Length: 276
Image (cartoon, rainbow, N blue to C red; front, side, top):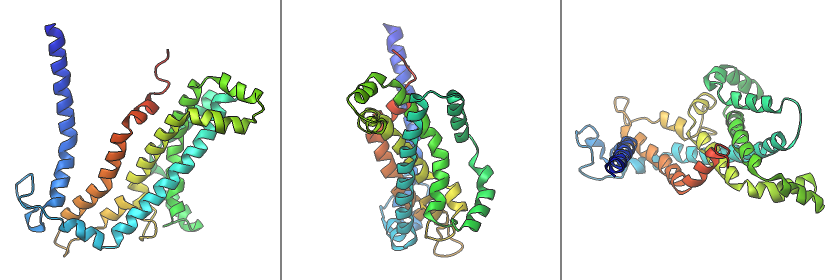
């Protein structure tokens, strides 16, 4: 009995420490965003006087609202096409019999492990020549390249768990392969589709490397890159408050989405890990 109590206390303390370690940086950023400009260098963790001046400043400048719209649009489109193409590829890999099927799935996953920094130089030159530099499409394509492997891997695990008797029953009833896929397989794999869409969206939303390297104006610059160009009222002033406020604005919505749909995300990531 004592052993069980000690084990429960150990895990409870471990959870508290981990949560505290994860939450403190976010609370510090929130505190900085609510401090007055004159109080940013004080030694207090929490603001002595709450001020929303930094939030007003970032939304007064058109650079940040434009970056938010770019991030929403680019991340949404990248997530949509990654999920659509990932569903088709995952269904084909799981359902169809062809040589090298397992090798292809392993190769797809290997692509996701490739360091993005290694292709920035060539990609920059290609985009300048083809006219894709500083455009939405110029960011959507790299995002899809690195998120499609993850999408295919997760969706393949979901399709593999679905009884194929349902697909055969639909075919016997007269459904075509496409109709069976859309009306039977996709609804059953909805948790995996949802999980994939969230993960792809978060990847595109948080990306800094491609956004800073493949854009130069507000036409396609996303939030992470836009924050890097924040300036103070003079060249001697660091825009700490504005950066903190912008970080809070773009982080809290993602945190809320993850907290609301965490069960679906966990189910999607662990699908196929346990049998029986």
